[in-house]
Length: 232
Ligand SMILES: [Zn+2]
Image 1: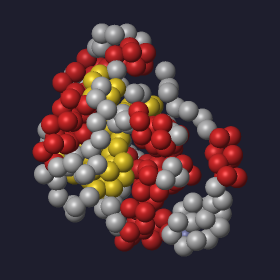
Image 2 (image 1 turned 45 degrees about the vertical axis):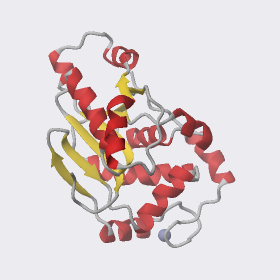
Image 3 (image 1 turned 90 degrees about the vertical axis):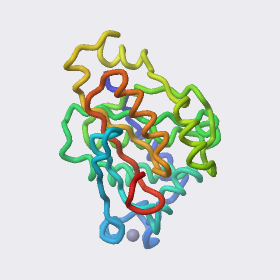
């Protein structure tokens, strides 16, 4: 079962509501033109890290600075849905080369934020990523605690993250066609997706739950990382 949402018509309507100007240079026609896309990639290059035991590999589109930070903030805090395809393209560049049976797992968004934004920005990002890569989006995780992490200290974030997520058993049995998974099911590569890596507490917590359930290959991808290239 593939949870990807086709939203071509919906996007056409949005293009009328939100005229498309490049966020980088102001040129009319695209949310982020190819020239600015390549320029940003050269100035703020993507990077990846093997981050054991939490992730086989963690992919990052760039540091949270300059136009990438601007795109992410506009998308996340000002409901600029039209940036979803370009942000997903940045992520697809990172994930390219990974196994074709990859399962994209959106980090569950706080429901109150979905209501205020009018859409689930992580799920939309994942849906766009699925269209570009052919991977499946399967919400293997649910949010069981609706806590806000913005502005909290890293210690509090880690504490909250431990309790934030749980397995979505319905989605697991729906995707695999059974509630009891086989060894080969557990070898399917998982890609957990979030927008920004701050302390990494939420991403690490999500990875821990999926690895504890038995998944052997858990990768991560985020659009941007705060505070430099190093991971704690
Ligand atoms: Zn441009």
